[in-house]
Amino acid sequence: MSVMKRREFITLLSSAATAWPLAARAQQPAMPVVGWLNGASPEGYAPYVAAFRQGLQQAGYVEGQNVAIEYRWAEGHYDRLTEQAADLMRRQITVIAAFSTPAALAAKTATSAIPIVFTTAEDPVKIGLVASLNRPGGNITGVTTLNVELAPKLLELLHEMVPTATVITLLINPANSVQAETATRGAQLAAQRLGLELHVLRASDEREFDAAFASSVQLRAGSHGEQLGALALRHAVPAVYPWHEAAAAGGLMSYGTNLTSLFRQVGVYTSRILKGEKPADLPVQQAVKLDLVINLKTTKALGPRRCSPAPTR
Image (cartoon, rainbow, N blue to C red; front, side, top):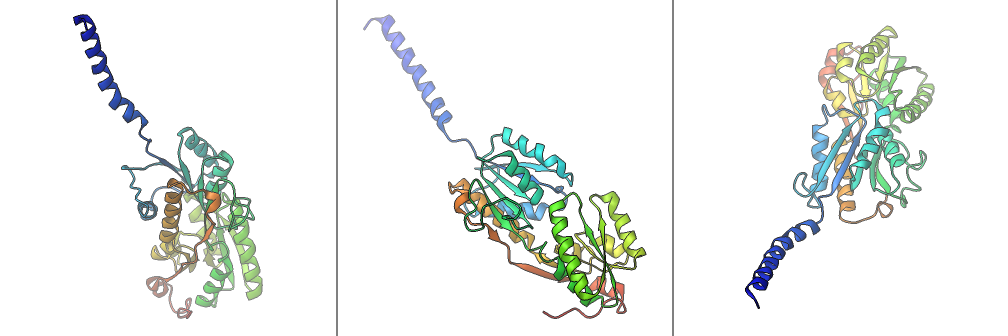
């Protein structure tokens, strides 16, 4: 072999040695990306984000190490969810975790190919998310809660705790029209059965919350609604909620799904899809763990004339 050819051969070997590790690195699978789609705002959600990550970790997925999460928060503006879902599609995500009925519907509209794991307080079959609970079909599955179905039960609990109240207000979020309609219908039936007068108030953002509670005071009503425990205490309005955070913040009572458990379940299902399972093969789960929380400080503040002893269950 001539000197010139030897030099060319050595150069080719050197180039190949450099190219091989680059090619090997290029063939390594990219880190999967989970699209987080939520109609709420991130404030106060840290415990539930942590619970979702715990669900992922059960299958060995750790954010920033072997999985990435793209967060999208609509901050109560549900009309943003459609564009946020479309933006996640452009990010080439692996799976969408959609929290709330509006987020689930937006995700389903955005894609029929990318897997979706949802939460909803509605019947997912009735609102068209899945074909059935046992065999959801398509690219979507998730976890349902009982909170909308609990609207009559919440009203009954409030009536037991505040038996002197004959006028009840139901606070709903009109932006979430599907859930608002179901909760209103159930509460109206329960109010008729108990001989109570029910007023439906609507509030979808912070500017409307104060006005809604002020209206409750003018009606001399107990309040049945979502969240807003601090406002209930400020206005001295007995209020029951489906989330325990509201009772902790000053609401009289809460009875509903354990959200930490709910978000962990979504994380577990998301990890199973990342492992290769298909949403169509994962039955829709029903969150059946319910928490009853009574704020004794609020009970005392409202006084014995307004609140009877806590009901036994």
